[in-house]
Length: 231
Image (cartoon, rainbow, N blue to C red):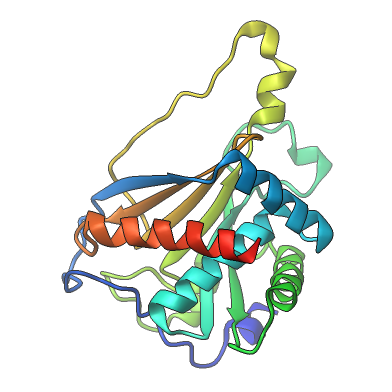
């Protein structure tokens, strides 16, 4: 499945880099945060429900539109983490089972927002059905010569974090999230969405050897603009 899905030529994303990619990256990163208003968040959820599209795939659709706008690429591959515990006997096992999968989408200028959301939802569902294949093995099979200054298969990762239910289950203990900052990123751009129920927050982690803060601010502002125009 993966060899068929990801095989063939796929030009790297022409992201709006401000600096030439060094021969070896330090992977030093910074984060810029943008937030959808409560009103925009409510309308985004209504859009997702009307199109029978998950919140993750709805957000992914708008990220893809941003990438299409800033790169000019039509064939876009992004990565996303999966929990990697599909079997019931693994759910209570201690340890990290996270795997990565690659979501490949082709955006055509003639596609409506509804058609794109439907295509993204279908592509993600299909990819999740094949999530058990180890990413490192896939990367070694598809990336014949891995450049030391570039991640294999994708440069942008998208993830959605939703801890609302976990916190509510133990609310009598007074739990609250504690942010951890490492200053080390693994990808050129990481779009980490935080579902806060009444609003959605987007944390854009970027490698500061490649981007300036102003460029990432424009990317964040474009995401908010495209969401509002699509609602």
